[in-house]
Amino acid sequence: MPVAFLARRLGITAQSRLEKLERQGIIEGYSLRLTPSYSENQVQAHLLVTLGPKYTASVQSLLRRIPEVRTIYSVSGNFDMIVMVEACSIKRLDAVIDEVGALDGVERTLSSLFLSTRLNR
Figure 1 (cartoon, rainbow, N blue to C red):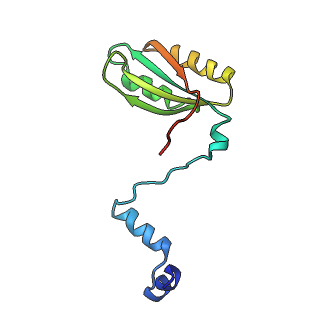
Figure 2 (cartoon, rainbow, N blue to C red; figure 1 turned 90 degrees about the vertical axis):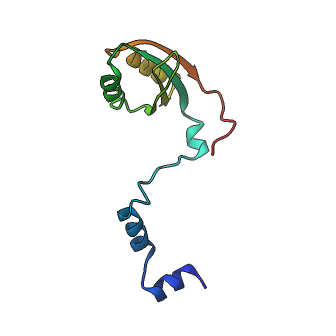
Figure 3 (tube, one colour; figure 1 turned 30 degrees about the horizontal axis):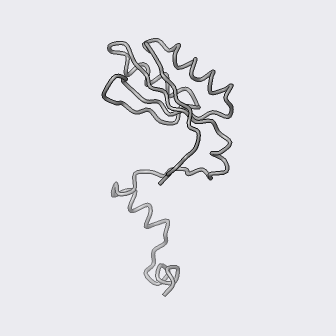
């Protein structure tokens, strides 16, 4: 039987089922997945960031205000975080990298531009 028929027969809707799953904490949220054609027109990079002592919280707060910052990872090793950045042009990406490097508490950055995506699951 079609799902829509079963839903009507059981008196449930997809919306009510989703709301129940949200209330139960099974569904935490929703995300947006952009088409490859859109992403191909964006310039992406990751920034390896070294922070001064006790600056993690304040730098993260400042990074959240930069629209081009997509993801912030806390990492172990020689750097304190990896910041994923996506910009509309090389010029804008350059400006964002400068902006991140100028944040109070950022001691050093090292950037790598993404040339192509080989796997995206």
